[in-house]
Length: 328
Image 1 (cartoon, rainbow, N blue to C red):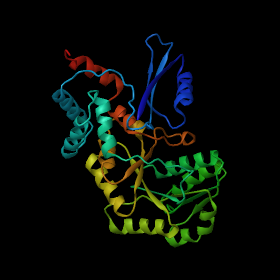
Image 2: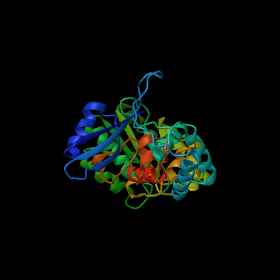
Image 3: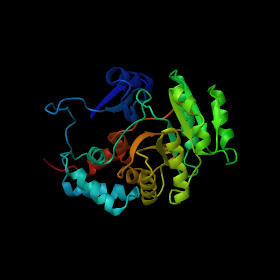
Image 4: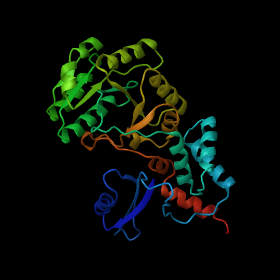
């Protein structure tokens, strides 16, 4: 993937430069206000499309020892709550690349172990069945997906099977009315299957489900039946900030019933990201992330560099470089 930094008088101007040069698929890695408060720097990343024989210009390396880099990465990943066996594997992967910038070395390790598969309305053919534990943010996620599809001019089918939780239907129905979408509320797989024609006629179908206990067989069977009834794709909605092993076990439980992708929520409220890494290092790819509670702003994509920069912010990397630089 390719990194590039843009400088402009304002953030809006810098973002416009990103869009012109790198396109809409660019991922914002970091933003920084200049020392004179009159300039803004935005660093963006995009998946590399160059041939393998070509080289990508990079900033000069900071010469640090492998042991120093290893120690630093272990400290960072421990602070983020990643369990020891995953730290060992991640650090080994990071040290395999010829990179001594901690964030970029970590990004390479994440790239090797975590799959990114964003939701693309242009290619999505199956209904999206959002699933997760209670309070994961499924309803807001359903509203965000519906809003984005509606703004794109697509015909949206929106349903919820969370018909028994107090306020569950009302919350999503409020969003649906704002978007001028009729909400379908059902409580069983058979009731949802009765709307198969309407689901098939829509450009995008989004199903919000009731929160489940991922370690209770009956809950998971019910969820799998809902997805199977309409030929839907189960998408795990996983809140950031959870215990790493719990997050990994939860992702594994949903993978067992067919979930291949997950949407990470509450990223704006989370400082320790070991749970995301632990879940992503399993069998479930990261589709998108939610970085704010505003429905209109939708979901964001994330790539390994962006995730690594969240774990090791740019100012921390600069501090590490100053403290560990050695003579060439």
